[in-house]
Image (cartoon, rainbow, N blue to C red; front, top):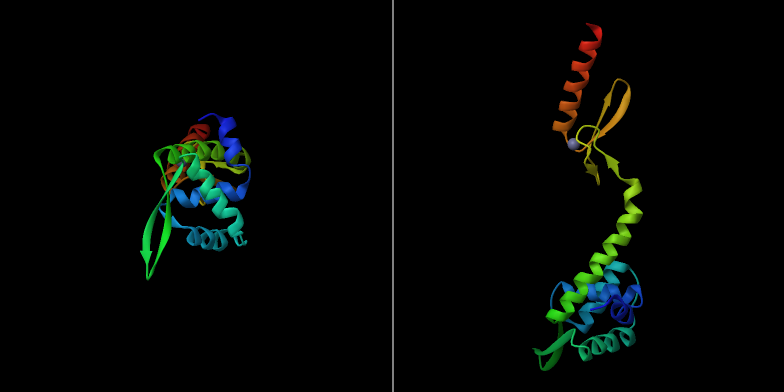
Length: 154
Ligand SMILES: [Zn+2]
């Protein structure tokens, strides 16, 4: 699927998010709506959700099954293989976008140089707070530093 086609289908964040919900597994229309509300903290109109689902269905990206719920039968929507492919392409694109925004805030382990996404290990060494990915890196950094200063003193 070309990126132009993807753009035509997913023109805004709400639609993108509906796809991420479908990607988790088969869903009733109303569970798409309630998950959206819970996670985004915003109402989404059924008049956006249902036409979008049927648009996806027409394009062969989604199919539905009828599942009995009490007396009634309800539609359960699920992504087809083609739909899953579309999602993967979207997620890839989205993560590239997001990483541009996140990268400058990333810290780098002072010992091994790997990126520290969250938490990590902080230690004050020679009066300076340093960030490491883990305690082991901190220990090896300290070992290195004391070896260096021992050499200098010699
Ligand atoms: Zn490290």
